[in-house]
Length: 342
Image 1 (spheres, rainbow, N blue to C red):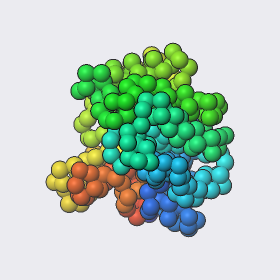
Image 2: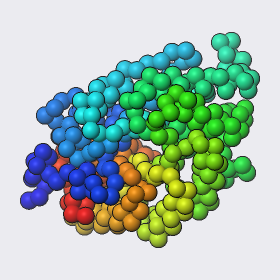
Image 3: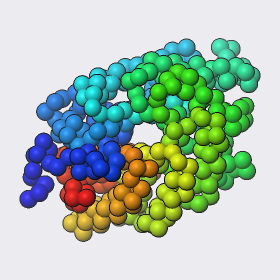
Image 4: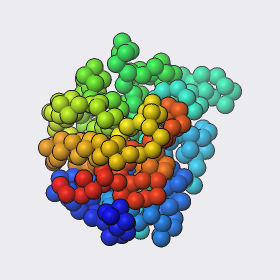
């Protein structure tokens, strides 16, 4: 019965949790979501408009926005910004300025000159600064939060940094360069470091040390915890310990990419009432911990809007999955109803 309620008549989670933290959606650059936001009568448009007071604009991946040295492409970002600016009460997060590992997403093309020769250290710093400042400068005053650096930590490495050509050339300085360039480009924007599996102790402590160092330099305002979780990992105790630890830094914490994978191995072909309820209980347990840290946790965002376009449908291989609060048709699931009464 509850699932038949029209999206425009649902309780608004942004209002339900207003005394605790902002609520919203990341992953809006997905093609299904962008198409939905462009149609005012679509379920996605109604859900995002009604449910959120913070938006995650993930249209700033280097391969999309800066595909070649000296060439910038804003065609993915401008429609999302147009939607956001039609709803000026919604704050905005930009994702992501620098993702320092080696594949097509991560700016490695800037490390070669026009002749294909490797650039030197000074040239790499200049190119990275220009990349960050071009993007942040264009949207100065229009985006309130930036994920400046994403997924730079690998606790398996001796120095704790993910392997790649940027690290080989600049080492830890690559992170400082990105943050200082963003700070200069928009001193009013709040700058975040963002990472995944942040509850695992080895990684947690590496992130803590990095953020503590950046804070001492006045370069960072918050930590983004992705929170791509399963039904069992992290445990409530592990999550609580993680938030206790990061709260010691005295910075804002955003839950930036929340989803609950309950079918990673593809053992289920459909969402049974029992599995639907298990996902709902997991969301409720997570939100209970987030609420405990209200004031430090200042925003919670799911990654994408409906099950229809979740990235998990194709990770690590194609499979059925139901990780979000709304099903593929935009109807609220048990997880939504479980959160609608704080």
